[in-house]
Length: 516
Image 1 (cartoon, helix red, strand yellow):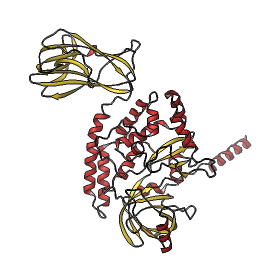
Image 2 (image 1 turned 45 degrees about the vertical axis):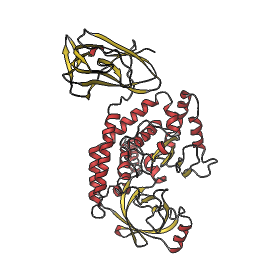
Image 3 (image 1 turned 120 degrees about the vertical axis):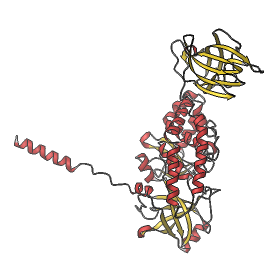
Image 4 (image 1 turned 180 degrees about the horizontal axis):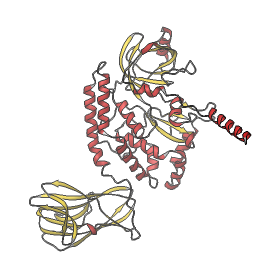
């Protein structure tokens, strides 16, 4: 018995000795959360300056000094930027810094690589930071952003936007495994163009193989078969979230609209499925009416034609809108950054302008997404669904709209004593097919306007309608059929277009029937 207890105690001791130690704090978390603006001084030797002038995208060594007396030697540096943001070394260049390019294991607050953006296309210095945080709040792996004051060879370059680099350290932090292929999407190039491999195993026979396989799957003519292929190659839910984010933020220069500013990682932890990463978010929210439906890239178009994808995209729009596009929080964050930078640069005007653009976009999104059904209704065995959740609306003039009891029926009610158009609207998401909509209505002392289809009626917002009734009537059934060629949202409208009168619509009679 004593031996047994001794053995047990010995095993317990071994277990405790082998207990996993708590992970060390990630210094990058504290760095990006800091309320202080870092000052970075970069020194490049004359011969390295000449090398950069000869090949501005090739790394040369430099020395980096930061607040607190920290000095990093042999840091890789090169110029960066595309057509709009590139500036020469003598000007105010955008820069990439790679701390372990020439010194293995050298890190900057837990980072291997960072970018210093000159923000020449964003005078507010806010777009990258706010939109990257919006992306992270949507659940997408995203490089973080902050600000820094930069000097280059004792020349004060001023305020820069500091971005976390997308490299193996980033991949390890966000995906767990850094061993998959990471590609730069290239300048205005879709998936069918060769990509620069940023990270991945060395010695691959064909570095472009994952991309080629993806493009072949996109070209499969049968939508159902295409979906099976793409489900195995792409994290589709993450992709639709990525597209929804680009559309909501009006990212005209992103992957979907311009085949630009994106990265692709084939994640080993998910069977090497492709995950798209945002980049180049310095020109955002420029158009408050930016279309949510326009798809210009290969993968989005290929997926949208597949069964169920229209609705999965809708779900992604709802997710980003409800989970990340939070105006109060974004405005608060803007104010925090403006205050943080105030001693160094006054960006209050840019902050107010961004809040205005966010508000304008928010009004449009409230209508486009707030009223958007995420998925089609579930039809019963009789292929019928009851229509509820109608919203009142005024198109012209004064009308009174509310729910009322009338002749033992619960009704949607419209009343007017002047020239007006009042209505009840109901968005419905539908798959392809033929449908019939039905409602029982009653008119009381309705005087028609001097126009066709005046009176009390039922219609689609797009145009199809029933015969309208006027004067005083009994309870009359209104119905019409319509076709849906592709997945889409329709809006049903119960309305009274009149000079005066009352309209009653029986809520128990409001039905949608799937004919075939």
